[in-house]
Length: 60
Ligand code: SF4
Image 1 (cartoon, helix red, strand yellow):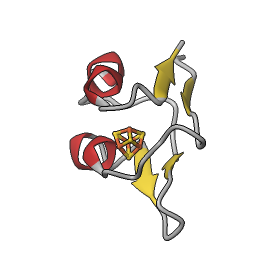
Image 2: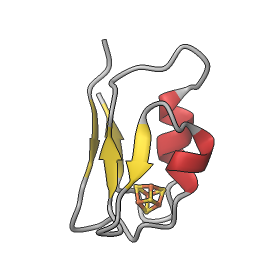
Image 3: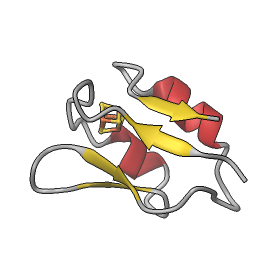
Image 4: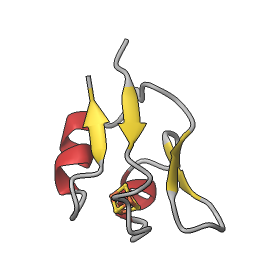
């Protein structure tokens, strides 16, 4: 299973990851994306990570 993390000090809360995969990412009121799950049956999480404008998402 993949391990997904968001670097809270880098994330700017743009919401793109949540738009791309709301099952895994949620931007909370503090403007930081949180990881709700470590896998998604319909998304390529590495692709979602690669679209983060500040490269805050890591998928291992
Ligand atoms: S795409 Fe990147 S910067 Fe935007 S909310 Fe997600 S983790 Fe944060």
